[in-house]
Length: 161
Image (cartoon, rainbow, N blue to C red; front, side, top):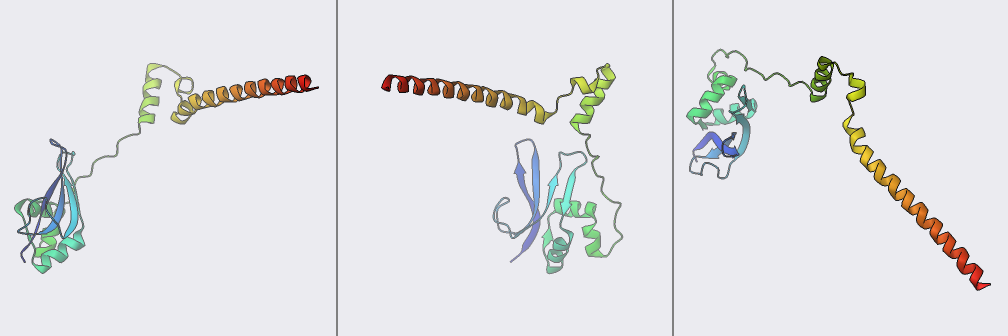
């Protein structure tokens, strides 16, 4: 059985995401796979490449043949050079972590001259406020119904005497 290391396509129409898989060479592109060994997201900047290096090394040593695209990805991650015994390339670029939306919002408020403590309402408090109003309204209704029931009970007792 000839085993290939290749890509299977996932994701939306114009947002391809690929899984790096081990599959029989006779199986369809998105057909049955033996093992998932990584992911590749080309649309992210920089492209996201994650590979289970130990599993790829195992499959290469067993004789699995990478497709041209996967071979290029393995060269970028250094797995191909590790398999061939060559010096490894420079490490991959990693995307910078995005700042939190809350800190961006507070910075924008300060820049516009608005006091953040007065303008800022935390999400939990904003979500809890309508619930608190509803629960208070329900409590008022239940109190009113209890008063009405108590008055009705008193009225029925006075008639019964």
